[in-house]
Amino acid sequence: MAFVGILASLVSLVCLVLVLVKMFPKEGVLKGILGIICGLYAFIWGWQHKDELANKNIMPVWTGAIVLGLIANLAAR
Image (cartoon, rainbow, N blue to C red; front, side, top):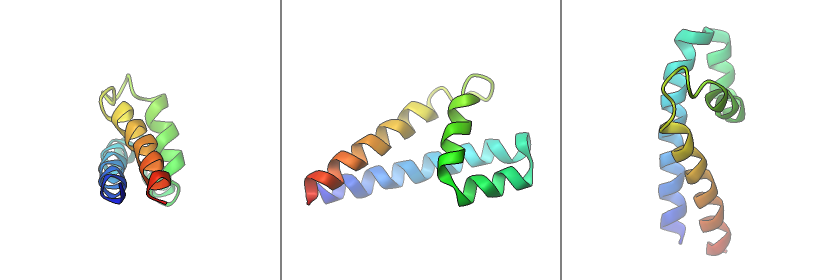
């Protein structure tokens, strides 16, 4: 189960980077840096802008990776 948790964390990291790539040109450097420091901000921003920035596939995958990672890490204990 630990392997599944690690894999879910890597998928989550990739989704974070994809959202940050779209966030920097749209919102500017300061909000992009805020997204790097606080991943929750980037997550919420991604859901709010999923229709206009074509994040329709990224955000459900990111949410699923977070949920799967939580379940896998709790089951690994």
